[in-house]
Image (cartoon, rainbow, N blue to C red; front, side):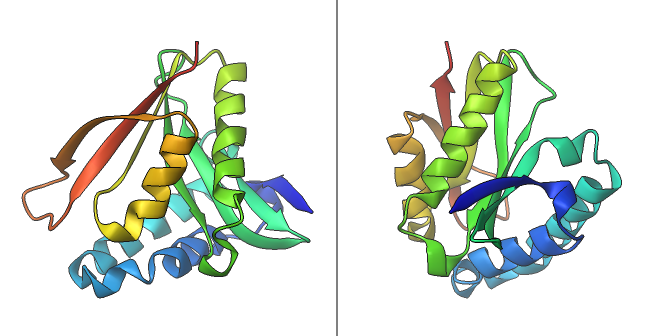
Amino acid sequence: MIEFTSFQHHSRGLLVSLLAQSYAGYFQYDPECKAAWQKDWEEYDRDVFQYPDTVGASGFVTCLEGRAIGFASWDPRQLPDIGIIGHNCILPDFRGNSYGIGQIVRVLGILREQGCLKACVTTGEHSFFKPAQQMYQSCGFTEVQRSYADVNSKFRTIDYELSLL
């Protein structure tokens, strides 16, 4: 059975571990970004547990029969105009079972409850991110732009939006 549990029911380090496992396959294509992403993930994980009423209240861990298999988060700072879907992942062994879609549907429901008008999300253009691209599109998101995150980027990002009206 799938459960969505509060970050606070888990231990510090879980989110960075889930992200590292989930993106391990990407680093064979772009190993230079690994250190920067790892640092970002560690800071995010720290903030989730250090600030449980803000960052820590804007996400959940997805558990299958008690085991953490992924998580999803959002940034509510631009509500009600925009809700930004943040870090989210499903461990490789559990992909292809609609767990990622379930996470995004849950996030969209929470954003709607908070009066959000539009949800935004960004993913990579690289083929590694094809399942994420398909997932966002199947949840109703439409592509709005592709761009390079910075001048050192090897691959472009894709921005998606979804009206929640």
